[in-house]
Image (tube, rainbow, N blue to C red):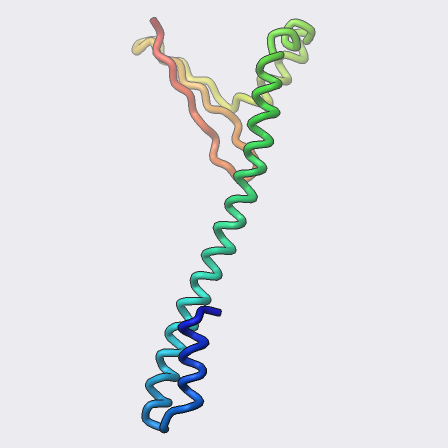
Length: 120
């Protein structure tokens, strides 16, 4: 609870009826602000926890990609197909514009990401 809210609460106990109504309204307003700030803080803490998880995931992906060539060479053609299908949702080739668009499969709850590469 903020010092302002505590101060309003103490002042509320020591005032007349008219002043008490004004202070009670201000106390309600300040309390609502504090509640909103606490809710935002909780939201930011959840976002930070999610980001920490992404950092761990990014580190794992980085390690995996650094050793990907060796792993790819060890895979059979059938396993390569399964791996690509798990990663790539769609490939669209536009020969007129010499453009390839690859849509990646998104993580659970995430939108698929698209990569575009111009030929040349």
